[in-house]
Amino acid sequence: MLSRYQARSFFLIGTAVMTVVFIGLTVDTFRQIPVITNEAEMSASVIRGKHLWDVNNCMGCHTLLGEGGYYAPELTKAYERRGEPFIRAMLKDPEAMYPGERKMQQYDLTEEQITDLVEFLKWIGTMDLQGFPPVPKLVSLAVPAGDKPVAQRTTQPKIYNQMCIACHALNGQGGTIGPALDGVGNRKTKEEIEIWLTDPLKVKPDSKMPKLPLTNEDIKELGAYLSQLKS
Ligand code: HEC
Ligand code: HEC
Image (cartoon, rainbow, N blue to C red; front, side, top):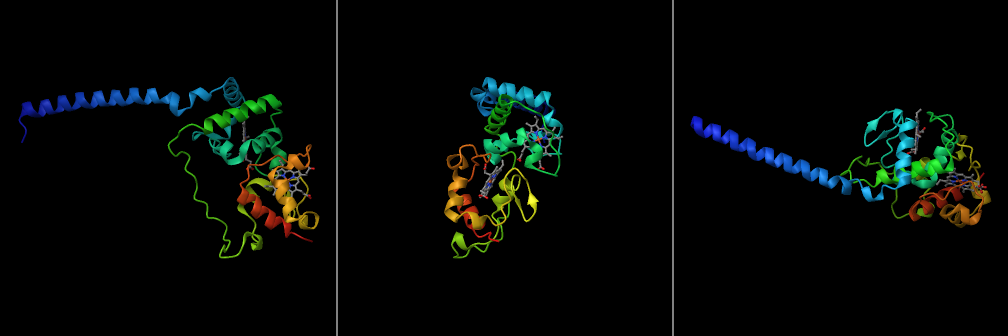
């Protein structure tokens, strides 16, 4: 048993030590903020983008760093997930990217404003959030990979629904910015589709299809999948 005196000293010393530790950690956290938030990358464009984010009340529907409305997708990692071309297309004409679905309003933003918003989203995505938001463990499509080469898989690659459906229809579902992809295998070979997907603007400089952030694997799978859509 502690004596009264010992108990009081224990309490006082313990409290004093913990207060010092607490203040130390707080100061340390504040010191790290410029690094964690990548303050050096905060350009004038990023700041203008943040302002546009606020005055247009994007937060009313979207969350950033988990804060905001839960109507629309969390955007902290939107840049990484979607890439610049997709976000630009989305901000220019949200309705066309997701026809007939949940609505994002048309803001009639100028090209410069769109650039600022993209820069802002890009910057916020580089913050060190120690794992937030958690990456969902998506079950990859039930493709029996087995020993079949990619070319023989017939299932629709998952990326198709993330990236392509917004602009292209297939079996009557999807957007109308690009042509329907039914029967695209009659018009283009696997190789032609791969070249197209690698950079549409190299094939057709005035194309409305942006260069999308696709990996080589995505391109191979999409080429294999689309080239066998024949009517
Ligand atoms: C009225 C609600 C609403 C407001 C306000 C709004 N959005 Fe959206 N936004 C949406 C919805 C809904 C979607 C998703 C479309 C879908 O999946 O059907 C979306 C999608 C997006 C996407 C694509 C995200 C992805 O992962 O595909 C971006 C980028 C985006 N919004 C940016 C913005 C910005 C920047 C603003 C402010 C200038 C804004 N939004 C304001 C509703 C809104
Ligand atoms: C922002 C809109 C947009 C997105 C997103 C998009 N495309 Fe396109 N795509 C187009 C447009 C527009 C064309 C027509 C080409 C042109 O003349 O500009 C096109 C053309 C094509 C063609 C050639 C079609 C033909 O009939 O010859 C293929 C193949 C294609 N896209 C595949 C895809 C795939 C696969 C994805 C997803 C990874 C995708 N596209 C995403 C807009 C888009």
